[in-house]
Length: 344
Image (cartoon, rainbow, N blue to C red; front, side, top):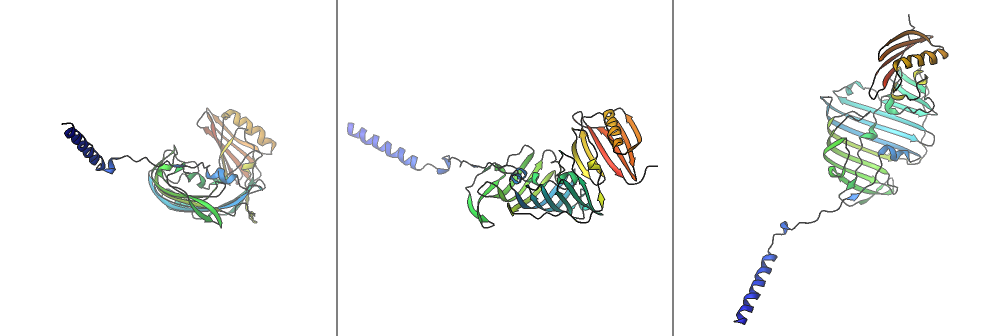
């Protein structure tokens, strides 16, 4: 009897082992690969750390903007010398619907020695920056393309070795799972970045289907749809020859007029300047009556009603119109425009 029990026990062990060996491998969980962490600053911040560079941008978009169908193509080349505080941007915009078809000429911007030069349909205009202020390309009508480039937080695939401008770079691929931005809902994405040994993005490419929760200031080309973005940085820390245009047609004096200390510029054009301030309409009226009179301007219109005001000042053959309206956060929006016809 003990021998029969021993044989029965051994048979059961063999049977259980056989069942385990036949278990479906698909039912066994496999741990997911841990993504590689990428600590990358924004494109604008990265470029501010180098002495000089040339950056080329290429953006295709198709989708909706403001409820209208929109599609287009933007290219831009920027030269910058951060040591000399000089920059040059040439941007072309083509597109259908939503107003982009109205941009027929390349947009161009120079900054040199605290002077801004902007190309207009009739020629070049220029103005001086006030001390302590900075007028960026997006303040004068150019798109802020840097804000469209989403930097991946991680990469699920291991890095590859590549070369760029003859130097070794690290190549990382990423998808929508590696992107995290509270203002962007990414449905699908496939991208690649190339990093140099200082973790600077030298090349970037991304195709994505996405939706912006709120429009990006100065880069509102799309609310939702498809984007194809790329850029590359060349000439790193090499001397950039940035020479402003030689023939100028118009001097913009609006940017040189006094503004309240807390003024935040929101737009600068040859004949229009816009900013926000916590100043009240009455205080703004007194401010401009005092400041402009010392510069030789004569008040020709003063209309203040509750939270709004309309002012006008004349000097030589120019009339400066100032409109003040309520804005958000208990501020006012101030718009200055210049008319070269004398006030009657």
